[in-house]
Every structure is written in C-alpha cells, then in structure tokens.
Length: 207
Image (cartoon, rainbow, N blue to C red):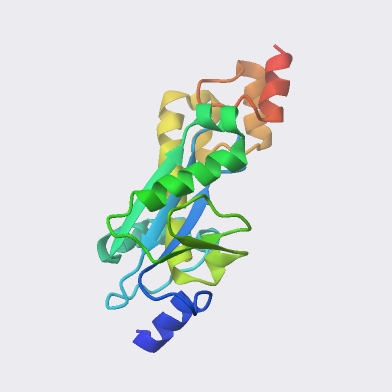
C-alpha cells in the first residue's frame, strides 16, 4: 500500500500553489464514428488508496471492470457525463468533449479547488483547471477518470450492439475498423452514427 506522502505527491505534482481537493478528468470516445463522447471526473480519497490505477488503455478489460467498481466505492466523489451524438455533430467533437468534461466536473458532489485534465485543453469551469499531456499516466485521479469513462462508454457500446447488431459495436466500440466501415457501406448509418465524421458521410453518399 502506498504511503500518504506518495499519494499526495502524484496528486499535487502539477498544483503546488493549490490547497484543497484535486479532481482528475478524462474522456473516452473522441475517435469513434458512433455513440456519445463520455467524460469522467474523480476526486480520490487519500485514506482509501486504490492499487493499479493507470491509463485505461494499459489495463486489461476485466481489471478495468473491477477498478471501475472500486473507484466508485472508494473515491470521495465521482461523476460520469457525456455529450450526445447530436451535440457532437452540431458543436464538433472537440467542443462536445469539453462540454462532457464540464458536465462531469459540475456533477461532482464536492467542489474541487483545482481540476487536472488529460490532454492539451481544458473546459470552461468555475474553478482553476490545468491540462496535462499524458495526464492519465501521470496523475492517479486522471487515471481513475480514464477508467470510469472507458468502462462506461464500452458498456454503452454493448447496448448499441444489442440494438444494431449488424454494425458489430461490441467488437470495435464504434471505431473505424474495416468491419465497421463495410457495415456502414452495406447498411448505411443508424441513429447512433456521427454524421459529421467523414467516413460516415462517405458511406451515406455511396447509398
């Protein structure tokens, strides 16, 4: 088990001038051709450490599922939010992602003193925020947020698969795999597809 000193070090490494709660924020689903973009915000509890937190892409699916439950049980608070396909198409994917992040932070039960966001840009918030490139590998609260967002979105894709099995959402999670593109050409787009994305537009133009 990590010491309190070690835990505080990675939570405050990018926020020496900030006292109070630190929230980590990350998203899942910017690249897929279908489904919402999902964001999560997490404030971890230093008295309830969670082992194995790292970038969700580096965690096996079964372990991600276990960590998802552990994070929700042990974090001081967390919130998962999203921006819809309609919002993605009307705003663009970047702005929709920032919107989902803002919703996640604003949905936290506790107000953080500062928000650390994975990537290069931060949403407009009423609290201080800092973008950290590869933050999901550097800050444990961001790692936790990445796991919540990833698992939640993957589960949404399983629901999409049940509704539209012809596209194979359970396998590719909406990303532009060869199978997904072939299904788009054959069946056209469903209501979950992002029509502002070029591969979806191209498939529709072929019909």
